[in-house]
Length: 264
Image (cartoon, one colour):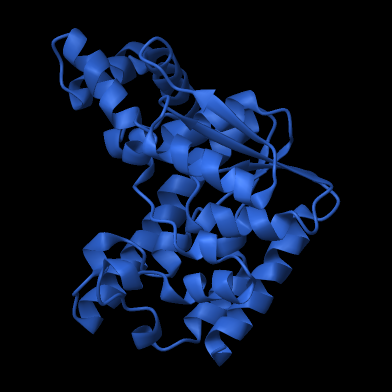
């Protein structure tokens, strides 16, 4: 076990324990590395842990999450996203948050469905891991200086745009979102690391340190899971494009029309 992975493991366990201990926890669960590790650690400290996956029936995330929930031995529920309900939820999310970015709205739809559905007050998941551990595919092959700028920019967008959006949604439904990967205990550990320990050489080496933590903790099946972006893994992008096409619009035009209806 490397010093980096050992320190990261301790920091992540402490951050998750501090957030979930003696609480009933809903995990926004994609069946991937990030939310899988959070769910596995939460199981040891929370009063209860239930996994929730929102997405199109038999979408990549739904299939992966169902399989991993069996391996974790945790209760799992599928929250269906369909052509019949996605436009109404998109409209609702725009009215609550004022968000107009089609990209943000598409990848935030799965979490919106979770916040709207679960009975637990506290929700956690894997948000922030890609920015912190250089998990995005676009980072592969970037020179060091470019990678540092891109990671800093993406983390800035997460903090100034994505988190405020999610907070508005959570507040509206009386929920609180816990972000273990953004806990100072974790971010300080990662900030002290050399960039070479985070820099992905190829698709399989992305978030290598986090995968090592999962293996060290006895969860090789979590370390091996591959993840798609939320809007694609959940099937929401396909669905909103179908809804837009039925109206003779692009997805961007649909978002723009809804935003104007709500706020003008």
